[in-house]
View 1 (tube, rainbow, N blue to C red):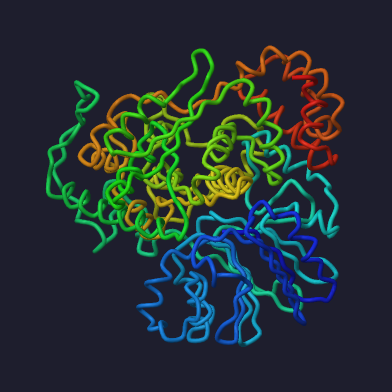
View 2: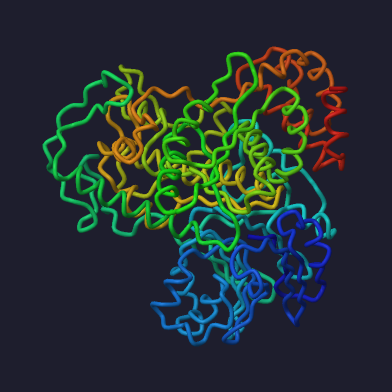
Length: 601
C-alpha cells in the first residue's frame, strides 16, 4: 500500500512535488526515479517484504510502480516456476517476469487490489486499475506528457492544474453522494475506471479496454431468475425448496427444506470465503478487522478467527447520541464467541465537529456518505496497533443484501420500485442509468447488483475506505471483493440471495452454522449516523453562512433555504460540500473551513 505519482512521456516531470502531497499514504519512505521518457515517485507503506519491496521495481527488462496488493503472488510464483528468477519477496515482482513471457495478458492473472504503471521490456507503457476499483488512480494529459497519481491533490501540489470545479459533477455529488464514472469534481482530471487498462505512447493514451469483474461464463440470454446458474460452477437447478417461514426466534432460520443443492452451495461458500480471507491476510505487519453488528463483518471475523492461532484484533465504533442505532452490543457478542481482541470506540458530537473537516480534507475526490465519519474514527483508533484492516465492503453487492433489491423484485402493487437512487433530478438520474446499464443475460436482481458495483461501490464505498484509512497510514482490504468470491456469488440463483424479507440468504445460512452468535436472522437496526442530531442546533447559523461560499451558490442557489428547511438527506451533504469546497477550491485549512461554515464550535 502506498501513494504513487508519475509521468509517462515528455520531459517536464514534477513527480518530486507530486509525491509530497501523498506522504500520508506512505509514511515509511519516498523514492523518486526519473528516466528518459518516464518518471516515478513512490511513498511507501511497508506491508510485504519490508526490506526488499521498494518501488519502482525493475526485473526482466521491465519496470512497475504500484499501489495495493497482489494477493496471489505466491500462486503466480509457484504455477509459473518463478522462484529461481525472483530477487525479492515483493507481491509485485512476479508481474514483471510474467509480462516477459506473455505480454499484457499477464495483467489478467492478477488477483488483488491495485493501481499501477508498467513499462515493459518492449517499451510499451500501461496504466491499470483492479477490476472492482478498490485502489484509485487519477490521470491528466498535459503538454509534458501523461501524469498519474493516487489522489487529485498531487496534481495541484505540483502546479500541473488548477482547482476548477466541474459544476455538473458537483451536482451529481449532491444528488447521489458521489460522482459517476470517470468524472471527478475537477475540470480536466479523470480517474481510471475499475478494470481499465490504458496503453500510453508519447504521453498520450493510444488504446484502452476494461478487464471486467463479471464472471465470463454467465449465460448470454436472459431467463428466469432461479435458472441463472453457471454450468459446471454450481449444482444444477431443480432442488425442491419450500417457501420460507418467518423465524420464531432470532437464532432460527426461515429455512427451506435442506436439500443437497443448498448443502453443496454452503460447502463451496465456506471454501471460497476461507480462501479469500486467507490470501487477504498475507502481510508482514499486524492486521485485524473492523467489526460492526452486521452479517458481512461477522463473516470475515469468523474466518479470521478460524485461520489465526492468536486472538484477532477487532475495532467497533458506537454512537454517543440519544436514539442512535448502536451495534456495539451485537459486535461484542460476536467478538466474545470468536475470542477476538475486541476494542470499542465511541463517536459523539465533539467527534463530529472535529472529524467532519478532516474527512473533507481526506476526500479530495469527494463522497458525501456520512459513513465516512465513523470509518475515519475507527482508522484513527486502530493507527499504531494495526497496519492492515479487513472490512466487509462488497458483501451486500455480491450476495444481494440491500432492501432496495428486494423492493425491485416485488410487483408495483406490493410496493416494488426500481433499485435506483431517489431524487437528484431527471438529468442526473439519466446519467446514472447510462452508467449503471447492465450487459444482457442478467436477471433483474443481478441488474440491480451490477448497477451498484458499477456506480456507488467504487465511487462511494471504496473511495471512503481508501481515503479514510490512508489518511492514517492504514491499508484496507475487502475479502468479498475478490474474483473468486465474485465468480461464486454473482451467478447464484436469485432465491439463494433473496427469500422473503431476507437478503444475503445463503450467507446468512452459512453464518447460522459458522457463528450462531451473529444471529444472522435477527432484525437489524440498520446503519445510520445521527448527523441530524448534531447539525440541527446550528442549522440556522450554517444556513446563513452557506450563501458566502461561491461553490455552494453556483451549484445549489437555494442551499440556504434547503438547509434551513431540514429536508431529509440535504443537510449533511450540503455541510460536507461546503467544507470540501472551502478546503479544496479555496485553499482553507480544515480548521479554517469549519470556522467559515459553522463558526465557533
